[in-house]
Length: 195
Image (cartoon, rainbow, N blue to C red; front, side):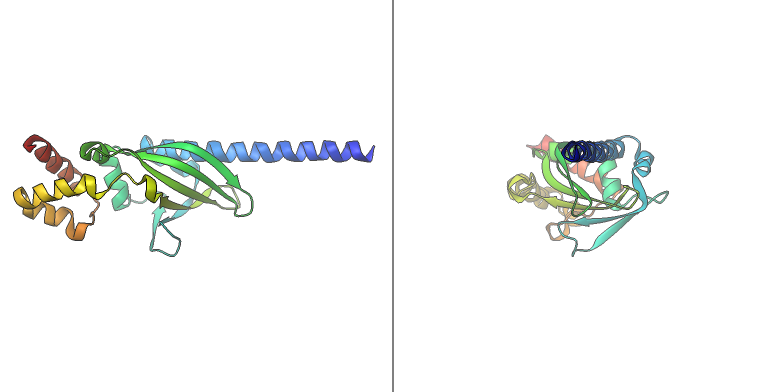
């Protein structure tokens, strides 16, 4: 009898854990999907403040606040029609996180001839199971932007659009903003037409 009760208890506990995991996976999927269409809907899945890191939690972080303007990269993503699709998502009980492999794509990647960028994302959950932090980590072997994509564009721009490329890509770094995203699109159109 004791053995049967233990088995039933284990089955109930495992079922609850599976339901929790599935709920959280669904949560992350909807959070990512809402970023592309209804940007206000993300707050149904996120805490009022979300901490965001790129590559490492030791690096400089940025914040997203409910009801506040988008970040500069958020502005860039909107103009570039950024989308994310997940490959796999799993729950880490020890860290109370959801991790996933995502493919990011946007107009910029398409215009330079790069494939979608593969990233590992870690979503940190608060006590209400809302997303309170996100760590984005590029997978170097899968990183879609490389010298092979950018160097021909930069070389052409240095010759034909030197002031524009100096402002848009100082020290080989992007300066994200709504305006610069539109400027990059125009520059890439001119580059494409010149080839």
